[in-house]
Length: 172
Ligand SMILES: CC(C)(COP(=O)(O)OP(=O)(O)OC[C@H]1O[C@@H](n2cnc3c(N)ncnc32)[C@H](O)[C@@H]1OP(=O)(O)O)[C@@H](O)C(=O)NCCC(=O)NCCS
Image 1 (tube, protein in one colour):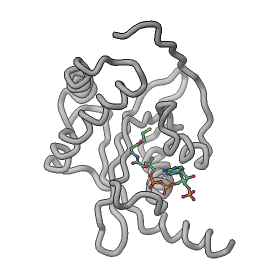
Image 2 (spheres, helix red, strand yellow; image 1 turned 90 degrees about the horizontal axis):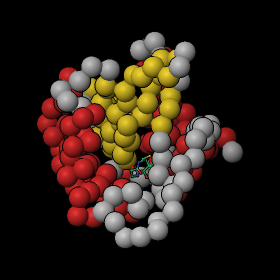
Image 3 (cartoon, helix red, strand yellow; image 1 turned 60 degrees about the vertical axis):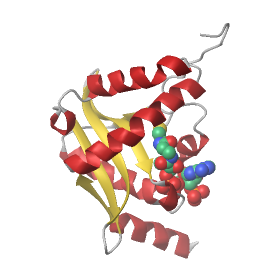
Image 4 (cartoon, protein in one colour; image 1 turned 120 degrees about the vertical axis):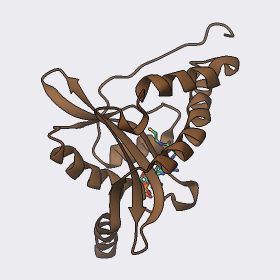
């Protein structure tokens, strides 16, 4: 029990969110656009033939000025004494009703580093970043088939606000 809490406090202390470099951003684009297309195919929203083009367009619309796009913050997750890059996080500041909040556009822990508490520690670190930006909450979207991410967010105290539903009636 005590070692569980000690380990998670240690993980949080060793996690640093660092602004992404241009080289890291280009690497991220090359991996994330096909992955996003695949998520959309698996969730039944996009046809396979158009998915890559739609994902590319979506990324250009979200980040028209790349890393310099106003109100967008892309970080690498760095961990441990040697600051190993274990993943990335992308948030955007958005007005939601009365509140200005952070919306999580993407979070990835690289496969070799998963299930070691890095995403949990990064979200704890993110809360301080978000408060420092003058934002009062964190919103995010998770695909229903992404059970790992869903479990992560529930554990971190996030609650569902909307549930989108869809029924396939014919092939796209
Ligand atoms: C989702 C993701 C970010 C989790 O990162 P992680 O560093 O492995 O997560 P953590 O180690 O902090 O896990 C915290 C908790 O989340 C849940 N969780 C994480 N991965 C899980 C999995 N594969 N299956 C079930 N639960 C999982 C568990 O409750 C876990 O706690 P536990 O290990 O004590 O059981 C990572 O799997 C990932 O990058 N996936 C691909 C990209 C993605 O899906 N991003 C989310 C988009 S919404």
